[in-house]
Structure formats: structure tokens, C-alpha cells
Amino acid sequence: MAERPDWRAEGRDWPNREASRFVTAAGLRWHVQVAGQGPVMLLLHGTAAATHSWRDLLPLLARDFTVVAPDLPGHGFSDSVSTARLSLPGMAASVAALLNVLGLRPVLAAGHSAGAAILLRMALDGRIAPDSIISLNGALQPLGDRHAAFFTRAARMLVGLPFVPSLFAWRAADRAVAERLLRDTGSRIDARGVDLYARLFRHSGHLAAALGMMANWDLVPLLRDLPKLAPRLLLVVGANDRAVPPVQAQAVRRLLPAARILTLSGLGHLAHEEQPAQAAALILGEMRQEMAA
Image 1 (cartoon, rainbow, N blue to C red):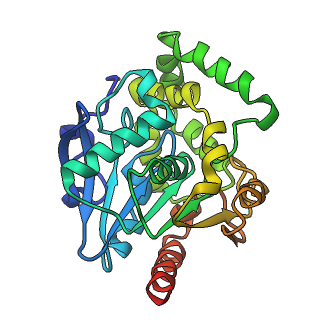
Image 2: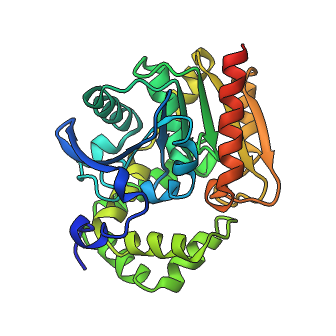
């Protein structure tokens, strides 16, 4: 199996393919989807995902927004970068460069898991100035909390061993493994969603980017700066999330009391994939609140 997915082969039936384009920014070739008309909305997926994560949500949002959704560096069909550029500030700078090339300025932004952290870093650094940021099961606390340093060191060790991503990809070539990994997040998504994740998990380059993010992810500066956040923050939490404990949203709100928490009962870490219509309604509701303010 090739290190990177091939758009000519695996992109032939990619969700929302008609919205896909390839753009060069920050020294790499991005796969990005742009669809719809209206105020600009930025969507950022989480670690080890890609634009397919928005497969059912993007068309719903495109009725009211110009939606822009990239594959993050090293993920999906976007080029790989050095592990240093997979850090939170590195990702924030790269996505900002992409937006500059596209000439788009989001008024609303939603990020899933690690994507939410990237959006917050971008806003805090003045790279974007949306009215609101929506965190969908945002990974905003250090991995393992008190044991974060251990997890980071372990990830750095793993990403430094060239055979590790290939080993993971070989194991994930079994669709049942991918299905079990996704189920362990507390979510049950449709068969097509499982197939798309399994397709990406078979590529060592995609998994290397996910490991590289873990190895270079430092959320302490983000949490330190969070009280300075200007945009409104909505923390959407899946009650069944097993990847990011729902209680972490309370810790974020202690740092930013103006943040609001909305809990979705019966849904897990991939809540926006389980119930895309519900996620779209939340986002449209946030936009209406902004317009009324």
C-alpha cells in the first residue's frame, strides 16, 4: 500500500468531490473543499481524519454558507510536512496561509477534536477573527491530563521510528480494526464512514501525520492564553464521548466563563457524523444568535 492516498484512484468517489480543489500554500499542496454561497465558514477536522468527516454536514451548511474545509497537512490528500510543522502553532500558521491564498475570511468556524484547538490558536494569534467558534468534542486538554508529558514523549519516540506508521497501517488494513477503533470513540457511524476511515488508515503517511501531531501537541500555552479569546465559544459535547471526556468542557469554561456548553445525549466523539442534521441546526442557530446580537 502506498504511503499517501492517490486522488486519481481513491479520490474518484470521495465525498463532495465536486467541491474539491488543490491549492498551493505554505509550501505544500492542499486538498480543500469549497462549496456554497454566503458568509464564510471554516471547518477543521481532527487528528487522523480528513474532509470525509464532513461528508454529510458540508452539503447542509453549504445552503447558507460558503464552506471551506481542508485536509490538514499530512492528512488525507494534503501534502506531508515536517513533524515540527505539525505543532499547534505550525498548523495554525499553515491553515492561515491557505485562507490567505483562497482569499476567504471566516465569520464562523467549527472544529472537531484537535481541529477546535487549531481554530482557537488561530483566533488567539489574530490569524482569523470569526464571530463564533464552535468546538465539536474539542480536544482542548493535554492528553492524559497529569500524564500528558509521558504521552507526548511516547508519541515522539514512536514517530521517530520509521517502521511504526507502516506497522499501524498494516494492522488497520483489516476493516474490522478500523471499525473497532471508531466504535471505541463512543460513536456508531454508517458503513460508508467506516470504509472511508479504513481507507485512510491503510496509508502510513496519513498515520504518521496523526502521530506527529500527538508528538508535537502542547496545549498548555493555548489554555494559558484562552481567557484572551475574543470570539464567542460554544463547546458542543457528546455525552458518550470516550475519546475526550465530556467533563473537560467544564475545565475549559472555568478558564473562559463566557463559554457555553451544549451536551448532546446519546452521541459520541464523532457526533457530527452520527447526526449531521443536528450539528447543522446547532451551527445555524449560532449564526442566528450572532445576527441578533
